[in-house]
Image 1: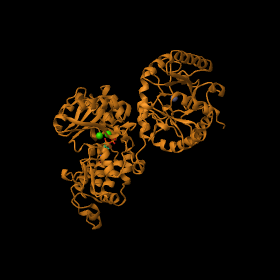
Image 2: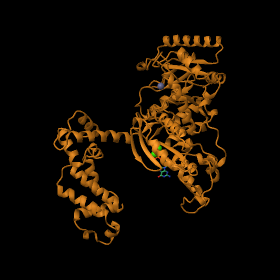
Image 3: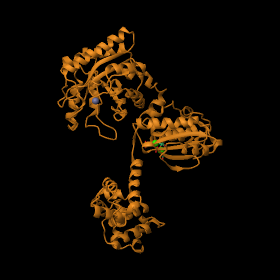
Image 4: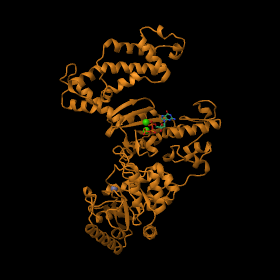
Length: 586
Ligand code: DGT
Ligand code: CA
Ligand code: CA
Ligand code: ZN
C-alpha cells in the first residue's frame, strides 16, 4: 500500500467510528492521521524501515501498529471487523450528498432506517423533515440525491437506449457544422447491456455543435459541458457523452472511443511493434506519445488504420479481444449476418396462450414486413400462468393455422405460418406433450419455465434429456437469464452445446431484449461443434418483430454468418431440415 491508500483507510475508519457514535477524540485521531499522511512527501515504507514512524506528530502507538500492518500486509483486521459491524446500508447512505456520519446515525437511531431504500421511503412519508436538524429542504435534497445516484449507477438494456441514440445521431447528422458522426462505446459494440450512450462527431466548429447539442429539447439535465465534449442525461436517466473532434482525428477517435479497452490495448501494442503510435488523435510515425499532425499517417477511415497495422477490418461488434485478432491477421473476416438476411422467427406466441394477436393478424402483419414465415409456438399446459395449451386446444390451433396457410396459398401469397409449440421441459427432462402430439407439429421448441433452482448437474441432465428427443428441433432460451433482473440458472452450457451437436438440435438466440440467450460469448464454441443458431423474437405482440434486428446484432457480435443461422434459409430448405431432424435415428 502507498501513502494515499493508507490515508484512505484511516479516513474511512474515522467515518465508521463516527457512524457508530464512538468517542470523538478517537475519531479525530484517525482523521488527523489520515490528513497528515496525505501530506507526507516521502513513502511510509521508508519511514517505517528507518524507524522514524514515532516521530510523526500525534500518531500514537496503537495507530502506528495499524499503519505498519497496512504497509506490510495490505490489510487491516481492525478495519475489516469495524466494517462488518456496521449495516452496509448505512455506509451506502454516506454516498448521498449532504449526508455525513452524524446525520446517518441520527436517521438510523431515530427512524430505524438502515438502507437507502428505507431512507427513500421515510422521505416520501415525510418522516425525515420532522427530525431535529433536518427540515423540509434537507429531505428534498436527500430524495433528489437518491434518485440521481440510482440513475447514474444504473445500466441499461441495449434495446432501450438504441432508439435514444438513433434520435440524437439524426440530429447530429442534420447539423450543418457536423462532418461525420457515429455512436461509439459499448453501444456501437452491441453489448447486451450498456452503461451510457457514447457519441462522436467531427466538425470545424465544435463549440457550436456542443452548444446546439446541449440545447436539444427533452434532455433531463446537462451534467458537464466543455468546448469539445458534453455529458447529458436523457429520458429514463440514461447518460450520453458527446465528443467533437477534427475530421482528421475522427477515424482514430472513433476507434478509441468504440473500444473495448482490451481491444484498444492490443491495437496500440501492434502500433508500437511497428514503430508507430496509436491514440485517440491518430496513428503517428513516432516512437513516443504525440499528437503532432505533421507525424500523422493519413487514415481517412477505421479500415485504413487496421490496414496500416497489418489487419483486416474488424467490425465494431467484435472488438472485445476475444479472438478477433487471430481472424483479422489470417484474412478478411467473414461477412457477418445482417438482420435483412432473416426470413422470419420460429418461436412466437399468439392469443392462444399469452400473446396479444391472433395467428391471422400475425400473418397479415408479417407479410407486410416482407417476411417469408413465422412460427406460432404457444406455451404448453404446464405453463398455466401463461395460459398454456392442453392437447385439444393445441389441435384446434393446428387446424386454424393450417387453414390460414391454405388461404394464403389460394391467394398466391409467399408466406406461411408454421404450426408449433414451445413445450415445457419438466423437472425430470421429459416434455409436457407426448411424442405423437409433438410429431404433428412443424416446429418444436423445448424450454425450461419452472424449477430454476435445480443443482447444476440435475439441470444439465434435464436439458440434455430434452435435447435428445428427436421431436425437439430447438432448445429455447438456454439459460433462462433476464438481464438486469434474474441470473441464469445453473447449467453446464458447454455440455448442453455438446448434446445439441450430437443430436442435431438447434439452439435459439432468443432476441427478446432482456434475454439475448444463448449469450454471444458461447456461440464460437457452438459453431465449432457444428451447432446451428436460430434467431427468435419470442414475440408476444406484433412490435416484437423488431427484435430480429437486435438478435442479428448479437449474432454479429458472436461472429455468426448467414450460413450459421437457419432462419436465413428459404421456407423450403427450412421445412426440409425440420423434417429431417425427425427422421434422424437416435
Ligand atoms: P459502458 O459505457 O460501461 O457500457 O462501456 P464502454 O465500453 O462504452 O465504456 P466507456 O463509456 O467508459 O468508454 C467508451 C470507450 O472509450 C471504451 O470502450 C474504450 C475507450 N476508453 C475509455 N476509457 C479508456 C481508458 O482509460 N483506456 C482506454 N484504452 N480506452 C478507454
Ligand atoms: Ca459507454
Ligand atoms: Ca462514456
Ligand atoms: Zn419461453
